[in-house]
Image (cartoon, rainbow, N blue to C red; front, side, top):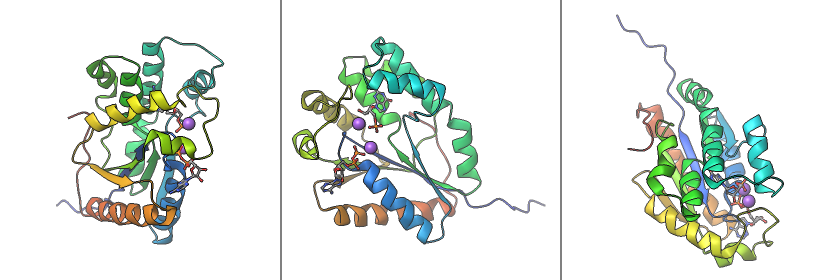
Length: 213
Ligand code: ADP
Ligand code: DGP
Ligand code: NA
Ligand code: NA
């Protein structure tokens, strides 16, 4: 007989958006919300600058190294692949993952540089598809007003405008557009609603799927 001792799986919840849209702020708030409700939850981020690949990415972002656009694209992708099996294991053993940026950043930022969008998607095929993508929507100008950009490579309004346009072409049914120009508490409430819905769906057996289909 097939007696299942399998735990309900966790949800893969991704926050996306331009630099300064409020992703890291909201990821932290969502983590404490879900933990407070007793859901096993972890907060992850990409790029994960801790790994050796991540250190190369970090050097590139802070302009300490120069790399060909294709090369850095593949490193960002490799940085997600090196976490893929652990990601699957966590989800299947019941941990919900909140992820600060994912594959959509990969495709939007590299396409905004002029790389072919299908070429950009190719190395991302087979990564786990998010159950929910919360896109924090804000204009590049308003985002730039938030404390101003640092010295990192992509933190320029003109470039962020192109990134915003490419993000729009990547929207699919897993996306929810959140108005990120509202007060933090308002944004927080909307994110909580969507995330909790997804966590419940996954508990009830929503299957995991793969990018990009
Ligand atoms: P991201 O991770 O998307 O780059 P952050 O969460 O680091 O964005 O937020 C960028 C800055 O904007 C921080 O100084 C943060 O305190 C501020 N911020 C975040 N959300 C809001 C909001 N809803 N309204 C005003 N300022 C915000
Ligand atoms: P963050 O640590 O979230 O501030 O991200 C660092 C910067 O790197 C930010 O400007 C977005 C960009 N970025 C994130 N992921 C990718 C990716 O996969 N590819 C490219 N080209 N850029 C990315
Ligand atoms: Na940044
Ligand atoms: Na951030």
